[in-house]
Amino acid sequence: MSISLINSSNLSGQIKERSRQLGFDLVGICSADDSRYRSYLRQWLDDGRQGSMEYLARRLDERTSPTTYMPGAKSVICVACNYHAKLEDQSDIPGNAQGKIARYVLGDDYHELLKSRLYALADWIKEQVPDAQTRCAVDTAPVMEKELSARAGVGWLGKNTCIINERIGSWVLLGEVLTTLELPFDTPAIDRCGTCQQCIDACPTQAIVAPYQLDARKCISYLTIEHRSTIDPDLQPLMQDWLFGCDICQEVCPWNGRAPFSLDPAFQSRLPAGKLDVSAVQQWTSTDYQSAMRNSAIKRIKLPILQRNARIVTTNLAGG
Image (cartoon, rainbow, N blue to C red; front, side, top):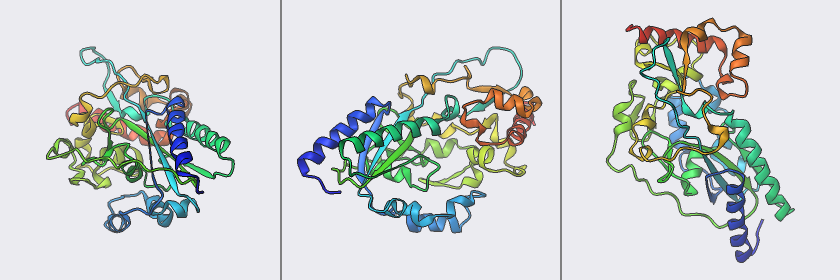
């Protein structure tokens, strides 16, 4: 949808202001052009680096073409929320073995949270321009959200394949509103990783096989969440005490050394130290699990998978 340059510039500013009012920490706008990484993604899939995530090979045309996902799309509004929860150091407190949980799931289920905010933004846009069409997306949608975020200036794609923002670091959850509106585009983010490769060096399983390249089959996040069968015995000791997900490549990133903590109540940790008692997890019934993880994205995996992870963590903490 074409609107005058002056009106589109004003609307762009208003969209960004409304995004911040809704709780998004970062916002940028980019074109709905096709992905530049279609051939790379195709090769990555052909090499089997997606592991058992077969869904990544489905809807490839939509995934690499925003206008296929949403016909008529001209612009993509890319937003991000800071989820950097402050955790307590309980390393000196005696107790049972504890398994670490990735920070992005320590608060409320981000899928529902981001969706509600994205829908509110989309509704507001249609109030301003009634003929505008929109479609919202979070990480479950077939959208190359990290590429779009980098194109919109939200952050650059780091060597660990995470989006990194100069101010917030990589502790960001991403969302998008595709729209038929023709809006001014922001300047793409500049890659500021430089010669640093701390994330590559720190990965226990060497899942970052080269700068900007991840082999999911070795990634601890993949192994603890997406991989539903037996984990390679050679990889199990390298998983250390990670029960769900992994933050190692983010924890060592220099840009995260000064990242601010989130003030959003929705992202505050339900677990003071970001950990769960792995002995208790192994004893949970389905009812226990549903109760303990109510409104948590951890429920993305079934209890038997979490208990499998708990057994591995127990063995690793006991010294193998």
